[in-house]
Image (tube, rainbow, N blue to C red; front, side, top):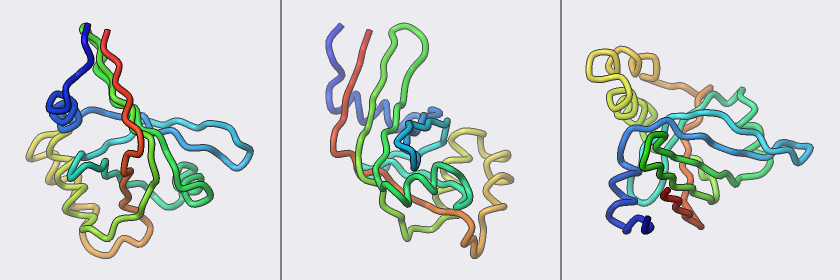
Length: 137
């Protein structure tokens, strides 16, 4: 099966899928964890507690890999590798858009309310891909 076109990749990344982020810990071991994301302006936006292992790993080594896949035939995946940058965007806005996409309007609205106001314990960040790998089977 042929690779995905740029337009197909863009459409795929805009769909609400649970991604898997990979970071490297202090001992050089890979660590992966499922995570929500929002694809916007050529970057994947994500959020996490600053107390998580993934955030500590990112602080020590600001690179990550994000795998987004479709787990039914025809199988497709897009892997994004790049530098992690903390975002100064509105945490509530990004969380709200993600929550509505993943949960629907009512449940998404309720979920996002926890992220209103000042939340210094939460990091909003983005991965700007330096490499994009596509697999279709």
